[in-house]
Length: 191
Ligand code: HEC
Ligand code: HEC
Ligand code: HEC
Ligand code: HEC
Image (cartoon, rainbow, N blue to C red; front, side, top):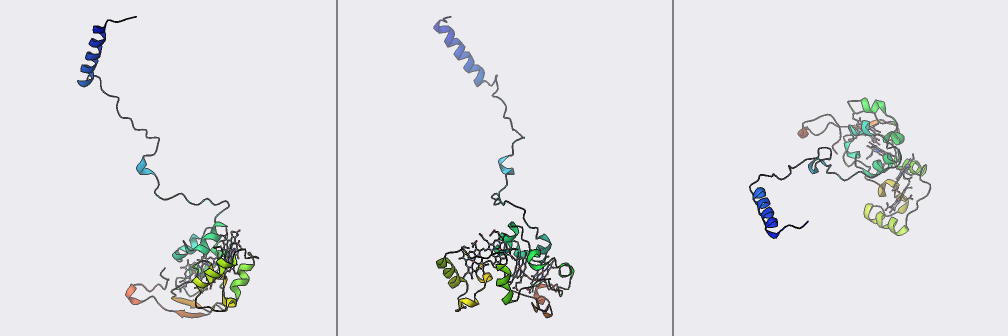
């Protein structure tokens, strides 16, 4: 079917008038509430995917908050080797508000390496990397025989202590209250 030109012009003009006058409104803005709004999306990067079960160290983190991020504790927790696997369930230690009961298993210097070797028979790392780390991490040790696994792996040693036991006998050697200036005498370490 063919329209004369004047019909097309008339239709076009009247449509323009109708729209500009707002007689036909634009479709309303719809918000899809099923989809998350951008603002609701998590800010943190997704956690690293771990295959097996992760050990629950929360009972220890209550006081040892500084071990939540510590590498040695974290890589092992991700392999389901928790604090208690290496230090024992240590219920009495956990429940002692005076902090004078030691955990079940402590590691005097000479027992560290044998403990690690129980699960890690080989050390499959390039010698150059190992030497570099030795130089970075233990500049004070000149004899390689003195270097321990935990000198190079993790930050597992406490820098500050308020309680100290003999690691072999469990006898209390130091049980000083926290400095008075901190307003606390709980004896719990500061991270
Ligand atoms: C009860 C067994 C066990 C003990 C004891 C143990 N580990 Fe592990 N460790 C593991 C497992 C399982 C993994 C997970 C990765 C793997 O399979 O090597 C791991 C991972 C590691 C990693 C990371 C390896 C990587 O590829 O990133 C390091 C480093 C490590 N252990 C060092 C140590 C040191 C140092 C000690 C001694 C303080 C120790 N381990 C004691 C079982 C153990
Ligand atoms: C002088 C430093 C140094 C010492 C001491 C050391 N390591 Fe390592 N280790 C390294 C370096 C460097 C790597 C290479 C991987 C990396 O960059 O973490 C490594 C890698 C590893 C790995 C992962 C690779 C693998 O073999 O599966 C494990 C597990 C490990 N070390 C365990 C141990 C244990 C157990 C001891 C003590 C018997 C120990 N290390 C002592 C520096 C050291
Ligand atoms: C793979 C075994 C392993 C795991 C898992 C592990 N530890 Fe240890 N831990 C050790 C060893 C070995 C030492 C001795 C390290 C040293 O003296 O260099 C130690 C030492 C410590 C010390 C004393 C450090 C010092 O300065 O004397 C504390 C506190 C401690 N661990 C707490 C924890 C807590 C809390 C967890 C869990 C979040 C944990 N550990 C998980 C093996 C382990
Ligand atoms: C009520 C608080 C509390 C809880 C819970 C707790 N600890 Fe402790 N732990 C301490 C205090 C305090 C020290 C002494 C550290 C210091 O001097 O700051 C300590 C020290 C340690 C040490 C060092 C021993 C050494 O070698 O000298 C280990 C290992 C340890 N705790 C393991 C654990 C484990 C494993 C758990 C969980 C099963 C745990 N702790 C739960 C308070 C706690």
